[in-house]
Amino acid sequence: MTTANPNPSNITYLPTHLCTEVTPQCPVEHSIYGYYPSIGGNAFFVGFFFMAAAFQLYAGIRYKTWTYLVAMFLGCVDQALGYIGRAILHNNPFDSVGFEIQICCLILGPAFNSAAIYLVLKHITLCFGPEYSRIPPRWYTYIFITGDLISLVIQAIGGGIAATSLSDEARQAVGDHLMMAGIAFQVVTLAFFATAATWYIRRRRQAPEPLSSEAAGFLRSPKFRAFAVGFAAAFTAILIRCVYRIVEMAGGWGNEIMQNEASFIALDGCMVSFATLIQTVLHPGWCFPRLSSAYTPPPNRTSTSGMRSAPGETIEMYKEGESGFPDDHA
Image 1 (tube, rainbow, N blue to C red):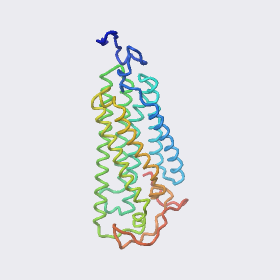
Image 2 (image 1 turned 45 degrees about the vertical axis):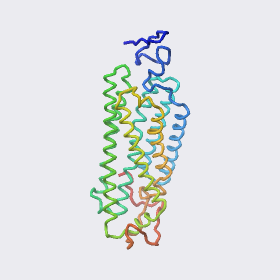
Image 3 (image 1 turned 90 degrees about the horizontal axis):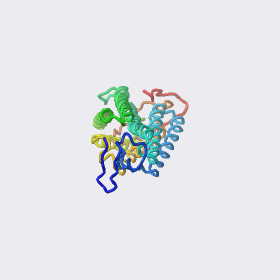
Image 4 (image 1 turned 180 degrees about the horizontal axis):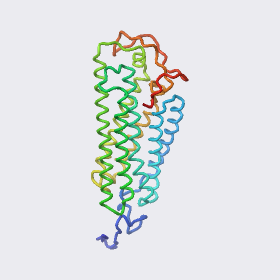
């Protein structure tokens, strides 16, 4: 169905699914996003995420944090490809290939950041005392990574349906709802993770038993403290991004929020970039090497100072080439 423009030129607009490029009959305002995506902003994100991917590859191999490497490397590459798709849309907002690339990649990417965050909690509980966790440490990985995979699958199916249904509004709506459901599931998983982490920290702080020398050494380390605060900030950034995406998609394709590039850059691009920057600069290889398959824990001696202070003795934080906890990936 066509729509007549009431202006003096009496231009007749084509339906969006028939538009292949910007013309008087297909103005940019009638594209799904309603604007030419910023080439400068998208080029920055492409460069940033590819650089982060390269650094993750180097650090992951250097420090043998294999599972963390896989999660972060895939997330960075996925985000870079998504912004390449948006750069393609700068040249032609109706380009179906660019739209399909960016909708699939940018929806899925942050789930990999979440997976990297989930890996940390297991090793924190193993270090500071697994007996204070209501959930067996090995189950943290199984529960939260499984939740992440479920959300990824739902989002991937929804993104695939939406990206290939530009001429079928009903089918596109199904894809939109599936993507929202997948992101909502991711938010639920994040909330469950936050609850489990808070619960563990509270129980450990209230416990009268002293810390092991390993835990005390980590606790007094400025690098580990920065790592803990940074990962909490990264978690918050991913959560903000997920909530924004649900709100963005709730209004359907081409809604006012979806057509606001500034909010997208601030609440999606910047949030995921911020989380990735923290997860890269505060890499566990040098901030919390217990994730490394080459890590060797020190002798299991205890500190008498509890959670709020640490003894003066030093411990060996990382010993390359020796095997200790080969289950960084588990």
